[in-house]
Image 1 (tube, helix red, strand yellow):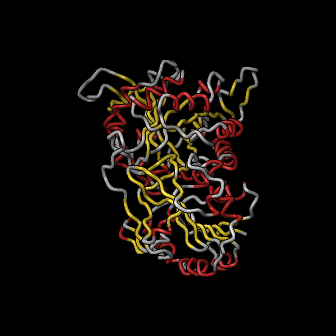
Image 2: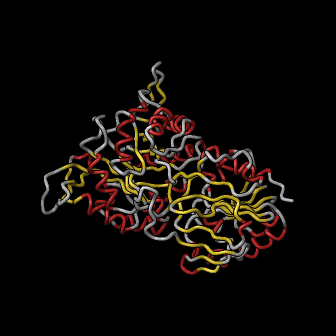
Length: 209
Length: 259
């Protein structure tokens, strides 16, 4: 059973539907025991870091997340879930979970494209990713595949070896992180067509050593 | 670098598409879920559903369509038409849509944009704008006026000013439909699209007038649109999503070409 953590952070049904389409059993839950008992845990989310952290603290789910990470069971953060696993977010100056050391940073204002045109924020739409390190979560993914992004902040871990993949929009920044039993993606694999489903499928099969 | 998005638009009435896909062999698919699946498999980057169901009671049929679409395709999709309240928005988003678009309801009550953005995030709220070219005047300095009811009712609002106001209220995206170009198949209103796109910081989806792939190239380059809506040119089998993408790719427009 895969637990999808429900902490009042946006629409979680799309992650649930994507996992079910892969023939996997999952449950959207905020129940601490269900999450602790799950084989795998997904930590999704859209919205803003401050209210997400407040919601986690209120329901004591932050302690559960720390426990899951420490237990060694596969754990995946998606979108906001790749941000609040770091130590701190610039979004409303929010202290975060700190599973990995790092800062969530805002895109600089007035970024320009290669042709000089102004880039819009949020970074919204389909973009390619560049794989930085070899990881089972990226199996079968090529440099041609594109993923669906919607974000105004990006994760910047301190340790370079925690970056699995990067993306370029004005400049190059991390979009997939990984360390031990933890992986995360800034894009939405559940909304990224077959390439996104492949990443979710890889996660469902992944046995971290 | 972001890919320019190609977005098929399906008009739905009481759970059926009003224009089915008519293939060369005259097979007509009128089920919006089947059509969405076909376009998803062909590499559409997003899909827009426009609910033209007349009565409020029949809204549940659309919610059921949204739910079934969400189980079938794994790309973003939005739903517009008849959205009047934050509760209407919530119903559509909970059923699985990524975004919801408001048009005339926002013209009549702009606060719905702010309420929607606060409740669900800016990225969920798309402002649909129907625009008609008029003479430049003090009220309409850009020469483009907001209209509703399919262009029959002029609202005395300047399109540029309305786009800016909607952005300020929290709209995450604008779907810009030229009433003059709509259905003509002679190309998008490139000037209008560029004007709006250069005015706002949020993405602009061009709509109305597409008849051939070159029209998409024009509006995605000269018109500075982030995305282009297409309808009859693919519904009737004259062109396909992959064919259009190949044309754009060869013309140097970045599109997602693996799916």
